[in-house]
Amino acid sequence: KQTSPAQSEFYQAVEDVLESIEPIIEERPKYQKQGIIERLVEPERQIMFRVPWVDDEGNVQVNKGYRVEFNSALGPYKGGLRFHPSVNAGIIKFLGFEQIFKNALTGLPIGGGKGGANFDPKGKSDAEIMRFCQSFMTELHRHIGPNTDVPAGDIGVGTREIGYMFGQYKRLVNRFDGVLTGKSHLWGGSYVRKQATGYGAVYFAQCLLEDSNETIEGKRCLVSGSGNVAIYAIEKLYELGAKPVTCSDSSGTIYHEQGIDLDLLKRIKEENHGRLHEYLETHENAQYTSREDYPDDGHCVWRYKGDIAFPCATQNELTDKDAQALLENGCRYIVEGANMPSTQGAVDLFIESGVGYGPGKAANAGGVATSQLEMAQNASMLRWSFDEVDCKLQSIMRNIYRDSKRTAEEFNHPSNLVLGANIAGFRKVADAMLEQGVV
Ligand code: NDP
Image (cartoon, rainbow, N blue to C red; front, side, top):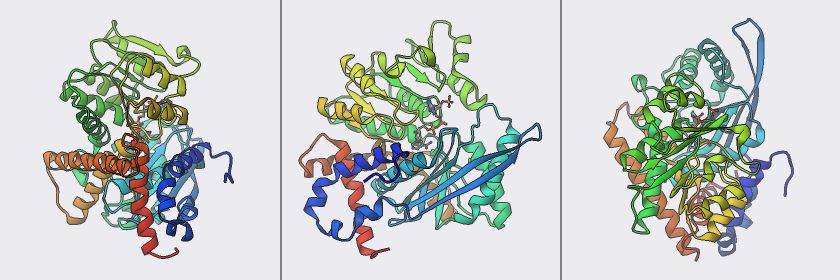
């Protein structure tokens, strides 16, 4: 029952899970008797706070900060922080809710949480970003800890922001704790964390394709986004011999028939925090479509021809009409790097059509899994090599795929990985909650 109708993304995420888990709820009435669902949809704790900071002109600015500690049945709350003007309580709740099942699917001991602020990092100076991060952490620090709640990055929060927040945390508590993941390699970060979500999504795609006796090599790929997830999905696609031909930001889309120039993309986005239209200054033969010229009913990335689509930007960026266009153009696999990037109608179409569909909850879990590997390294004061972490990531992604697939088969929907991933994640959390009593 919807008690807060403004939180549409949260309800979308909850409906997706509740619909999928119907068969296991019927099979195990204990879940219902013990109020597992009623407890699961209510966060254990939600924190909302004021984030005041001073801009470069000396004006006081105020943003809203959030941390939703959703479920700790399997371990400390774990999930990223998002800095984006669209952030509100409903978005943080949807992301926190998804995180519970995603984290369970990794098989690692981590609960679910999420946080962020309605702060827009675009156009801000480095000093403004630092002051904002320090103010945000000044409140957040009293709610987190290496065994309590361990935030990471998400949209608008990368190594730079994690660095500023960690510095402030350390200053406030006078301890060098593994309290944030996604840290720099120089002081406690794990190798592969930066690459993990993008690489992980491609490893997941490999598993999907292998099941149909296909490989990624030679495939034309449509990627949306141009941030952390998109860049490293593109990097791994090239390593495996595929050809990514698109990327996008919130202002427009690049289509480059020769394949996206990855070094240039990194320079524009990672080094200069710039805009994607700058790509044309180096590649006149690429096409740039500005957001104003997108089709009214969708996103221009999904109107190109491709074998595999990787939505890697944001929620609901792939509409019902986009899904239809992808299928009509012969796209055979959709693997989600972003969280809930496809509308419910698009997901239904993918499932009905029988294309290979990897939902974000499973396909983008490589990031949080590697964050947990960072926690393990911090706790043991050890550091593993790039190859060692990458190997673990590959094996985790393979296990997530197998677990989702096997569960989908067990419940007689062999190719429905949405159902498989939701039930597999739910079962682990629900059983842990049963064993821990009514709390
Ligand atoms: P980044 O901030 O690095 O990049 C986000 C990209 O998406 C940018 O290109 C951004 O464009 C674009 N974008 C963001 N919001 C919108 C919007 N409202 N409309 C259109 N484009 C938008 O974030 P990440 O790459 O880290 O995250 C991307 C997605 O992956 C998110 O859904 C996130 O929750 C999910 N994810 C991330 C993980 C991680 O490890 N980073 C882990 C698991 C999931 P612009 O620069 O113009 O804003």
